[in-house]
Image (cartoon, rainbow, N blue to C red; front, side, top):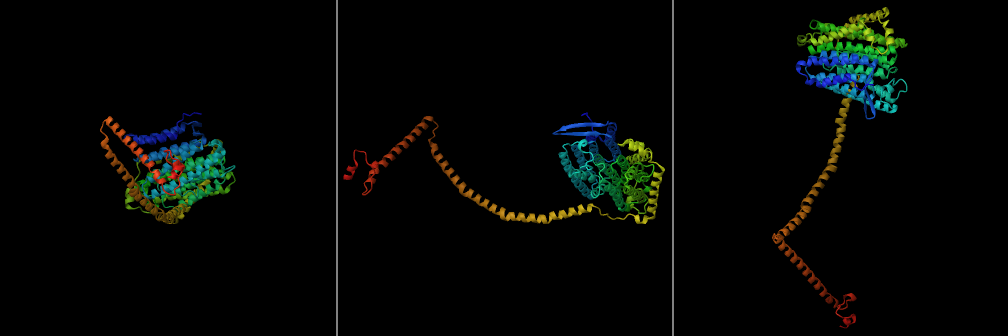
Length: 637
């Protein structure tokens, strides 16, 4: 255990905070330096547990490095370099800062060794990525960003509730003690809450509609980052905690087919790619559900390859958007004359995602299909092969054809704007394209990183077998034949495909109407009732009380004070300023008061016999005069 440990995410966070202070002349070099340092840090980290911090009653583990976390950390730090290079010419520091903090959240989740650390980085990832949508500056982007944020807040709350519930039950917040096959044995409601939080980020239907909604509205470079990190971080979390959870197998197969269907229907190129993320992540989710060593290796390998070729595809379509201002197929066509290099790089991405031999998808996707057949789940293997045919149909054929060769003619201003993108965008696409081909040809580069080396070595013997090659080529060639035979039916149309987001869009409007009219009406009625029954009587009472206080209480008090002040003024003349005169005057007044009191007492006593001489009045013994007379004498008189 070593507490002195530099976290790769910390390098990105510090780099993002210091970016505004870097001089303009050094900014591009700095933008490349920081992610390269992150990649080198990930590459040189040894396996083990690092960065343990005691906080209150918890032990936070920021660095749990093993084979599973390293394969994800490696490709994510590499993609950070490519994404930053792709957007190197962007002058807005805020976009780079948001991108780096977003990546740091993803890398922090990958190396987190406890639930608290995982949740903190998980939310950092969600709240930073929303700015990559808002920075596009369109009204649609603003709405998509708010929907994205609300959906992820819901997922974060479900995740937090499940974590607290589960860890209070287990008595441990550590992954190693309580984060292994959560829903395989003794599944509880808490584990399913955690699962909901994870599969929402993985875009599992029906919790998926946020993905095409948000990725299609992000900035041209923001979508390159977003396509690589959120869903693959969720795949890592599922590999870590839910390997072998059977419910994930049908969910993954549904994802693979669902994304293909909607991608075929889509008119916007980036939304098409976003729907196909759902399809490709479906392979990974199904692999996690199968839970075997081969399947987990396949999920990790396919996540690795997917980050590269999907990033390349978003780079290509993002370059078209950046240079022409358009991303819809109905507004594009014939651009191969204006953007030949972009076309070539995008085609390589399409062949990779379609699992053509000698491309990266061929050596990763087939591992999951093989694991399905090995587990005697034939329906899984065959349906995933069907989804693979759909992938080639829309991403390998539809995207290149209708952007670069389609009969749709762009507007004159679109055509005039079309040109090759800046050099840094082409270099980033070229590096990604090279890696897609390199991994497909030299697959040991990828297989040596996988968590189960024996299973990887066994599959490496058959990956380029004649049967596998012929099977793949048959599927792809017949798919290509079908595309050109049905080309007229596949021509994009400027339509909108309804998806699951329709429910919360309409639900949100219904809630807004309910809050605006029924609830507001009741609130207004209660407010008026309070005003007439409570507030107005209260104000009248206060007014009467104020009048009484002003004219009665204050009048009496003020009158007494005025009288007392007048007396004081009259007595002021006695103050001569000399102590002897003041004392003499005080004694004289005291003597006058005493004399007056004695005279008053004498007069009162003298009046008593007169009252006794009344005829018939009873006389008490105590009231008789004391001058020697008895009661008999008084009677005789």
